[in-house]
Amino acid sequence: MDTKLLELLVCPVTKGPLIFDRERQELISKSARLAYAVRDGMPILLENEARVLTDEEIDKLQG
Image (cartoon, one colour):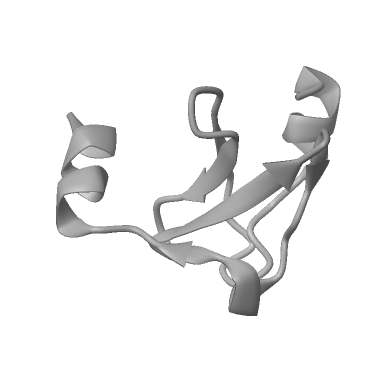
């Protein structure tokens, strides 16, 4: 994921920042509690395709 692109992208739900999870190839929105897939280098920023984060995943992001 291009770091310059990541700086420009925001969560479509909250308009907040996104964190790139390289291992899972997802963009994480802590405020929306959603994970957006990145497929072939392209972020899929559609709320209806996002994965809802578990409480445990949110806790890991906080700590």
